[in-house]
Amino acid sequence: MNRAALLAGAGGIIIGGLAMLVAGGSLGADPGRAEVEGIVRDYILANPDIIPEAMQRLQTREVAKVVDANREALETPFGSAWAGNPRGDVVLVEFFDYACGFCRKSNADVDRLLQEDKNLKVVWREWPVLGQDSLAAAEASLAAAKQGKFDRYFKALFEQGRPTPPAIAAAGNAAQVTALVSPDLQREIEKNYQLARTIGASGTPAFVVGDKVLQGAVGYDALKEAIAEARRS
Image (cartoon, rainbow, N blue to C red; front, side, top):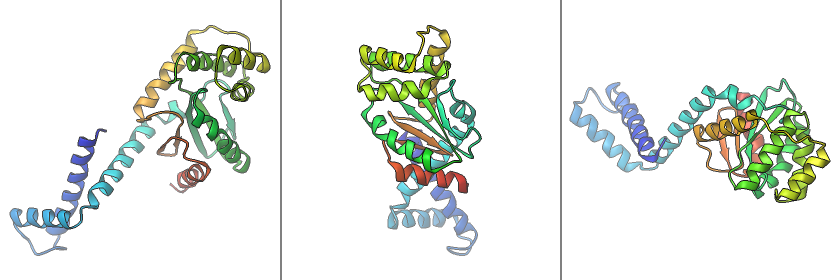
């Protein structure tokens, strides 16, 4: 949702809620329309902080709807591009790019969560947004995932550094990945682009946990809390 739509929606929530209070007698006895509008206006002017709070709540609610509508596509891995408990009660989805330094930084946080939480499943989604080398790395990574070798390739390429052509080749050799040209690799990348746009992801890494979308390298604590919140809901 854009800011104008969020603001309009938030305003509607606030005004509607306050009007219900007024009509219900919480703020006065059976006032007329003009009085209701005056009370609502005065309340908002006296409490301007409720506007951004209402906008945040509305945005969170709308994101949750979008995630729920696309949950199967988000949480279904391509080949072996997943780790953890296959029947985990929470799935953490990460959109990543091999050229993304923040993705590299987040790897340790995700590894720690997998080691500590035996009911967690992690699904990685290729989202090559940083150029042609990223796209070539994503295609090779999906080929590895299709051959059941995603984990080995993933670790090998991040160990190489930036996904240059020599680094991609070296990671492929280390993971014993056979070169593969297949239309389903490109379809998967296109699907991931569409999913990322749909959930409003602004860049890599982007995480989906439960009904929440977390943007950027948010760190171990934020991811752990999001997992705990997903279990509570």
